[in-house]
Amino acid sequence: MSSRFPNITFGPRSLLYSFRMAKSHYQAPRGTRDILPAEAEKWRAILTAFADLASRFGYGQVVSPIFEDVGVFLRLGENTEIVSKEMFTFQDKDPKTPQSLALRPELTASICRAFAQHRPTTPWKVWYEGPQFRYEKPQAGRFRQFVQVGAEIIGENDPAADVEIISLAWRFYESVGLKNISLLLNTLGDSETREIYNRELYSYLLDKSDELSDESKNTLKKNPLRVLDSKREEDRQVISDAPTIQEFLNPEDKAHFDLVCDGLDSVKIPFSITPRLVRGLDYYTRTTFEFVANDLQTAQNAVGGGGRYDGLVEELGGPPTQGIGFALGVDRILLACESEGVKLDYRKPLDAFVVDLTGGSHATQIADELRHYGLKVDRSFGDRSMKSQMKVADRSGALYAIIIGDDELEDNEVTLRDLRGDGDQVRVSRSDIVSGWLDIVKGRNSE
Ligand code: AMP
Image (cartoon, rainbow, N blue to C red; front, side, top):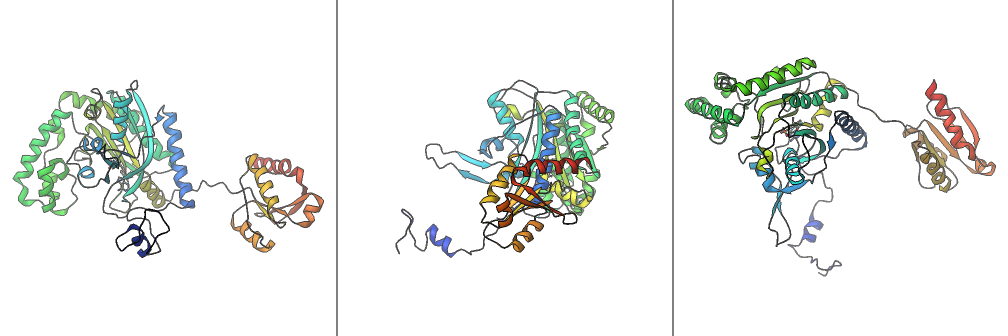
């Protein structure tokens, strides 16, 4: 069979064949979803609140590529699940650069790569927003594409930086209106402390491995710290008797942690010290934290987390540089807002909806003129009846309808009808729509 498309054949194995044979109703891929206009308004509100707050804290935005050389993420630790199991990887098409690329599973590594590449002055205080990709088993609050906002301070070891980062996240939840969030805080010590602890924990868990679940036995071989993360009933007793990192901290680790706790107390941010808090990524040293939405009734109730990573920039080819940051999950923040009953409807209604009974060209001009003056305006399309256009105007939620029919056209006027009050209407001259409108808005605002 010949094809209308050059270079594309239509045979049982061709791409085109599978397109034709595929179901005609496509769905968003598993673990992803469409954010439709009503929900997207809430997203925008959340993202804007974060951007405003981060800028008030003195952070600048970084926009980095959605995919990176896979090596950037391998630096997160090959035993880290998001690296070993969950990355979406693909090959560069250019045979001269046989590079493996990966959709980013998180952004801290990209930010550290950007730091190592551009060498900005420190402390580098930056924020970001955007989609991340992890090939996880989808469930409530867990997606394969999800959006995070986050912030990092790179090149600063002062515990005050830890306090500032945690405060930025905390104040953000507050500004969104969430009230029932808990901050869990821990320290993993410096890399030496962590290594000693890892060894101790490993031999303790190995001793008890008969009592552990099969999954935890497996995890133990790769990463003993992650066993502490298990929520399985069989593991509970072994985990609760396990040695804690606190017993192994050196005096500098302790002093750092105490200063972080004092700093949080001084700005009245409540926290619970959680000695068994381990986070999914291997790179953390010293301060680690997680934010939990207590009203979220799903297994996935962590709405954010982060910590200090004092070796990552160096791993990515930069100078030895300390850093601390967090990432917050926007999808779950929205779910938490729903379960706490936080209203996130920031939508400003349409000021006006133009109903044109003369063909549509006047609607084009009037809408353009009003939009130019900053009003939020929509119009209908097609040569529809007054009744059907008014129905759309009403459904649009607009405050006023601006109606132009043959009578109005002859008198060079329009009819302004109040759609939300008692349906009053007045005729105003075409040339007065903008000034008349602005008077109405001024009057409304001063009420
Ligand atoms: P992480 O980068 O793993 O430290 O995650 C930080 C935050 O991102 C978590 O607390 C969640 O709120 C969110 N998050 C992580 N993974 C997912 C996912 N698969 N789906 C939705 N949100 C996620």
